[in-house]
Amino acid sequence: MEVYTSDSSDTDSREQKTLDFGRMSLDLVTLEDHLASPQKALLKSSGDIETMLLNHNRLVGLPRLLLQFNNLKILDLSSNAITTLPDAVCQLPLVTLIAKNNLLTNASLPKSLLTKMANTAAGSNSTLKELNLSGNQLTHFPEQVTELRHLKYLYLGGNKISGVSKDIWKMQSLHVLSLGGNLISEVPEAVGSLNQLQALVLCDNLIEILPTSIARLKNLKSLLLHKNRLRHLPKDIVALKNLTELSLRDNPLVVRFVQDMALKPPTLLELAGRMVKASGQRPGPYDIPRTLAEYLNSANCCVNPNCKGVFFDNRVEHIKFVDFCGKYRVPLLQYLCSSKCIEPEQPAARGSSVPAAIASSGFMMRKVLLG
Image (cartoon, rainbow, N blue to C red; front, side, top):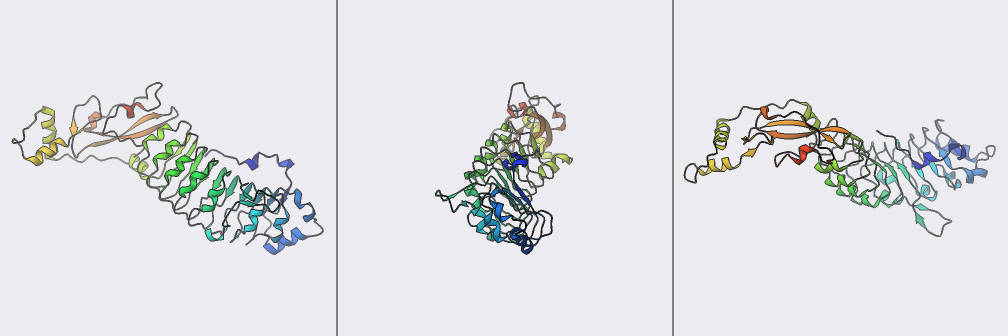
């Protein structure tokens, strides 16, 4: 996957004033002793501290003295045992909040994540641009994050989230939405309204169908869908011209592609029907029973333009690779009347944004990728 750096990474680290208590095996009492120690005089310079690293400790909560650091921009609480994220954290002007790999639940999050600065007349606003709650115990999408209109990076992977909020369209500044490793079975159409989105991570979930609105994510560069239950993709996904990474492994559509597709012998009824259609005969209403007439009318034409054959219930399923955005090849599933109708692969027409196979496939070309 491409590396997407947050705004906090763009600041020259030499200019930041950082308080690093990471990987010191501190519990809450010991940490508060460090912060309050007169010898260290941390509280005297608390207004100058912009970054506090408390990661990989034994914290179960946040220190009471945290609010003294009223200019804090980056707070890293990752890999602790924190069970509650108090409302006090919203009184800090945080730009980046990392609380991954803790014991947080939906009930233990603040009801609102908007910044509540006591010394501002504007009241509640949104300063957060990066929020990482991955690896916790969330069971549903935290609705309060949809209030964060300036949020660019949202990481909620490795939880037990079963769905995505339909109000996610409100988060128009999102660049990265990471929801991998959850229990999501359905993605709402509202995701297609995230116009600034560059990376969408939905891997390792229970998703069977993607919304067609995915094709509206014109700035999308990375789409990770591996380890789901997808059997097909929206045909309009070929319109994603900026997409450079598409991961589909371990989905039924890929398993079906890599496995041999066995052809069952056609029935005598199938063979007789093909012969009648090939001969050009058109039996009258009194020549054959009505059921046979309906059967003949249900014939499907072979998608090979050089074949005039038909099929009824028996067909050959063939994967044909076509150019996708001129960057890589993707397979399309087509139905043929015989294995003899399989054509050599042909590149897409020059200057065409849609693969030639889609444009000329006709009704029976399944306009799906890898499935």
